[in-house]
Length: 474
Image (cartoon, rainbow, N blue to C red):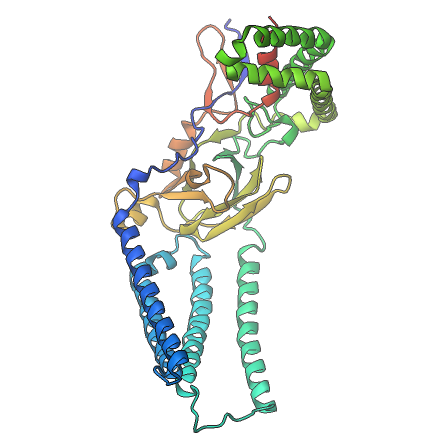
């Protein structure tokens, strides 16, 4: 009879995103740069010409330029140029403002609210700017005209207070109602999908055959368990890893005096033989070690790392006492690097973050929600357009939905996304779902290999320091 074992998923770092590389000067758009420099030069020449005119007036005492008329006409030119710029942006870049057809049930209402808000504010913007520059032109200084001192007008005060109040009240109430409707009572048929954010990627977790997402906890996060899922074997591996690291740290703590002495001896030798000039980087590293050792910083850091890891063990032990927490519901959960949905089926995305604040943003579905470490959030929606239909509408056979990070979270934020695919039928979804490995898969020890899931491992700078110090002491 073949022996069956339960093996947690092994994590790899295949999806770690490299930070952006520094742009080369050779790739700069020199034509655009030179064009803007030329425009700036022309402006400076014109300004210099006006300075010469002002100086001439001062010397001769005669009026050379009517500055009030010039300023008035400049205002008109600026108004025309500004309106032309607004028109250009709407025509050529408006496609980036308007997201196109919404692909979710609530998207139409969301877009309607946006259009109303944009319409009101754009109308007010155009009217006020036109009046502003027109009055600058019409009521420019005239020696033959005396300004009228206008102290107060109650009717005017009431008009420009009540009218904006009514408009803003309408917009605010519309927005509040829309948001309450979108985030209100959930559809009982909604399927829950957990979306986990980390620098710089996303993971999705689907419930297994039991249709229940297992428990999770931030204290369980490790290289092989990046989502901190409450699974016995994975947590036991983390405990063993922490205990091993503590043993290494305590060993380094016991040999602290010998290590400092060895570093000092080597420092003296490199200094006396002149090797510090030949190997400046090695000497710099060694000098820092000697300084940290002599000052006590090295010992304090060891003590701090030991305390931190023991605290982690204590926290894990508290959760291990609760057997219901490790009830096995997480074993069949599926952690994926892609999100697949069924058209017209309601979903609830439950968001978590591992490190810093992220923002889950799916523009086609009109979905955005902050992902905050230690504070789970959620957003419910129903997709109404498949990926294939979206490609037809956009006339782009390569178009795909994506979930982006819409909050700057680090160097590779620009590339933090996960593909979202909407299929037509449950059959298509079930085919994809069956191809995804469960978090804990029963395998035959003699013939099967552990399931592999690509995920960015948790970086542990302390472990790197430990390994380096052990190798150095040897």
